[in-house]
Length: 397
Image 1: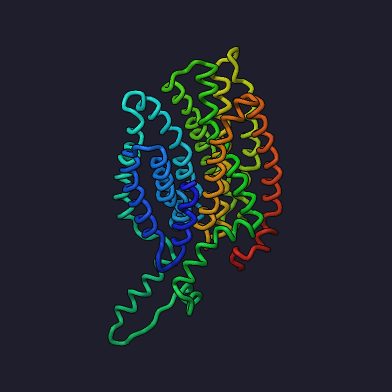
Image 2: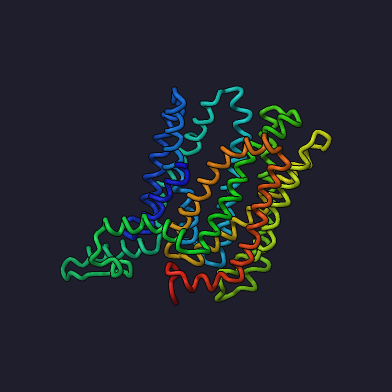
């Protein structure tokens, strides 16, 4: 839950011109590194759980706001390629972490997995401290303040659009309003509400594999801990395949056909095909997990699932900044919270689900939910423009 609640605080702050992106990045990740030290040394379960919550709280804002920063830097033609790299890392990191821990923990103990986090985070902290500001509103705000300081003999006031909008409003009120934006957009904008629910479902199912894999690969196929960890590489394989296919589509089809002005719904075209993939992957994984069937068959289902979800996530992460450029970080924060909350619940309910119903029926239940979301994707593609025109969070041209 800390993974989802942290961005609700730090990401909206990054949209305030007087604060910007860099400061929340640096503060939150610095605290993440500090908290990681007592986490590795925790002596009680309660203390460990609390510190893990703080790790998620301080570590996740960098991940949630990353999409907004990428949208700040890259033009619309290059943005899809840049965003795929970001989503690729988000998808592959948990799977690779399981592989490394699967071999390291039996030899070095579970605490080493906590030290691994700090070892990897240290260099990233240095890079974040050197990260230049990317928010256009903040860059303009700081430039205006510098110009005012330069004109000491003939004082002159420079104001940006954000300064004019927030004139007469206290900084406390601006912060308070910014912190409410993620929940407002989520509940008042039907398109964002659906996308949050859909991405939460697919993300939660992704994390349910962490409970299903021991049942399938250790219980049915007799894998040891390290070998079971290698099965998670199927997620990386599926992500690499979809990464290559999606970038080829963007380069060969999407960019040449969409020069100039285009509707944001155009980025959802790959999702119209990929939305069927999660159901197919779940059904293949669930019903092929049988001692009489080779383990590679259910693993193919695991390849299909992340391959399709990667494209779905990519389409969503491109659609959000295209529709809500001013509130991109807040929308990403709301999406991150709902995803993380459902993933937290999925870890809790997935093992009883698979143990009581069986892996096949359990996956069928989850596949049925993803099939229902297919209607939502097609509805959003065809009706998204009408929904945007009614939304008060979309800038009116």
